[in-house]
Length: 172
Image (cartoon, rainbow, N blue to C red; front, top):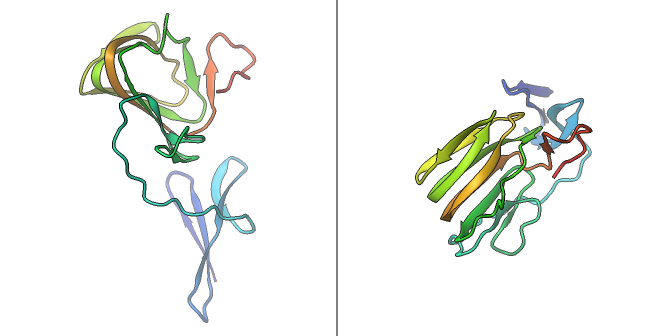
């Protein structure tokens, strides 16, 4: 018997139930025609183990494709950049950009960020956060240190496109 469950977010889960053993065989995640679904025949990645550390006294990638050290958690679905610094990381400001597939959120624990959205600037201070939905051009134009912030993006994908790029191939 084949059981198909549809979720409102267009995620389709296929499970095969063996009527004799009542075993459920989960099928592995893949993309097919732009719709996320579970499919047979793909290799499974090992399940990540529980990960716990104190936040460091420096800036680093806590979660994402390629964490720089054992402190970070490797994830294809979640990116978390932790900034803990006495210096600005944007210089004269970031160029406006958008993300094609991911939402982004900045959480300010200490210090202040100034972000620009559609030509308007917003000051994000301690214990405040801001979110940029997929496709929204934005930039961090000033950092007022000392700062301690979290930048969270999901999914963790290289989908950054700068406004001044007309060919759409400027992914990061």
